[in-house]
Amino acid sequence: MIDPFLRRYHALLLPLAILAVLRVIGFAYLYSRDPVQTDFAAMYHAAASMRAGFDPYRNNVDDDLALWDGAASFRHSRFLYPPIVAYALQPIALLPYPAAKTLWTATSLLILAAATVIAIRAVGLHLDRPRWLFTIIVIALLFPLLPLLERGQIDQVTLLFISIGFYLIFARRRDLAGGAVIALAGFVKLQCFYLLPLLLIARRPRAAVGMAIAIAAIALLQLALCGVWFNRQYVFEELPRISRFGETGTDAMRIDSPTIRAVNAKVPPGDVIASGKFQYHYTVLPNYAALASLVPYVRGVFNLAHLRLPSPVISFPLLAAAVALASYVLRRGVADDDGYGRLAIVAASMIIVMLIAPITWTTNLVWLAPIVPLMLFGPDLPNHRLVIAAAVVGLILLLLPDPLIYFLARGHLDALLGARYVAALLLLLPYALLIARHQPFPVRSAEATPASMAG
Image (tube, rainbow, N blue to C red; front, side, top):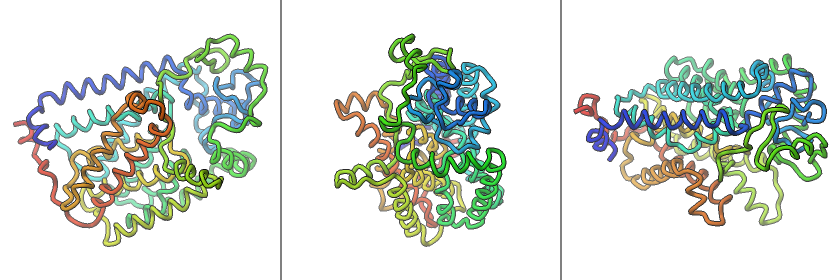
């Protein structure tokens, strides 16, 4: 269905792609100026706190207002990442906050674009001009891209590490080095460590070994750079809290700060002061669903039975179940000898990680950008038309903006907004797993040449 459309309307693809890209750039410009970018604010001020000799995991507002991100209201900060991330971000904390977040936003777009191209090149997928343009249009319309920019998240960086890792694995046949680069992503977002067993399922044991060795090496580097105290604190104090509450907490954890009260008295509702002097809107993206993991929903079922389980207790069995499912589907081997097969392996791995991670933010779904060509142009599945239809529905769910879902939800916002992303991932996973099997499938009538597309 897509290829006749591309052949018929190929002349419109370039202007539509330009408009789609300009739309994203326009939102990026808006988000670099008006909102505080709460996630980047947490990272920036954690890095500034570490550089100033303070604890990046504590709310230092009463020690130095310049170290307050404008949103933290608990005794702990909103910084969730390992200490090496705060250490690595110290150079950007040298800039004034407005300049830092403008630079971060522009760099985020460039990194996301580079990661997407690298991932597609990594698997050896060759797209003609019309398919590239249509891919760009769809990626630019993925709604999770907007929260990524508005919140100033870091998921584009993890995607870059994963893309480079798979480039080394598939394009360069350097599995050890590829696994080592993927390990870097785990020290930014811990759920990326779940890729280790999935590399084994994908028949890449050397990549898994490289990832394991790199994890140990980077852990030692983090120990050397950040000290024993920060590492011990993060593992034994911060991680249990983060896995249970994220950046929030109980009422007993709230900070009674005269400094925060004094600042809040000076700004109108909905505005915040970052670094003690820069005033922004808290958010300009209304009706934003933050979470996109299956774990909170499973935990909610247990809560109905009065069983209060921490997220990791649910996440690890889900990982085991996902590994078992992937092992069964891929028991006859993996299709890593063609571009779509390789891309399906990458897609299945990243979808599984996002589904079963204790915390998957909606912004994390920008990981799906490189696998858009698989959703649009991937092979046919004989006798599995329902699987293809499910994948199409999953892609549509990713394109729908949250405000539209809010309008349709009418009173059930929180449940429906988050559930639609979980549903999208669950609908996309079967297609990715089946294509990843070592079994030839006919390519959709789409496999047109550039010449035929232009004609």
